[in-house]
Length: 241
Image (tube, rainbow, N blue to C red; front, side, top):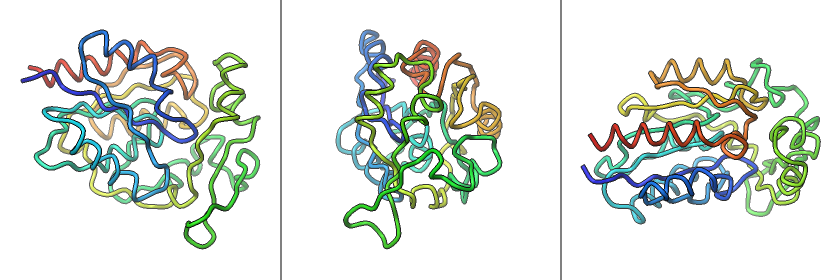
């Protein structure tokens, strides 16, 4: 089996650069790595990543999702089943019919609240469905919820450059779950205040994932990337055997 390509799918409020530390390490190990844009718009997100993989990769793929990226990767479909393994990092691992809102509601997440404006700035955007909004994190939410273990300078950079997710993305039900037919790994952020660790673990066990932990915030891929690197390498080694 040829060396798999690693495709890293970022989550809400970040972009492909959130994977830098992970991507550098994997590239040093000889892997071809991609970190495509996640549109953060809802149903189109999985279709876009599916198209990206179909057109930009060849041979086996290890598909890695962080945060909402896990929701997307669970719904990615490519011709010929090029995707051979899934890795979830501080991620949503939905079953068919699940929505983000259902998963977070009553979970203890800071985002599972009745009034989202306590942590989000909601604004309209052109071309969207009537009534839909983009959700930006408030400075408080970045500093105290999303990235509390990053440097102050890095937290402010997220405040200033964040890519918003639309409200409708949190309401669209997941399709058939890719983890039902693929081996999976899950890295649980022990200090995650976005997707609580217990919620991550429950989803990971349901998926039959090989579970490990990363001491860190929701952005442990930046603050403590080694557990994620190790999980991706384990998935790649499985694919290569």
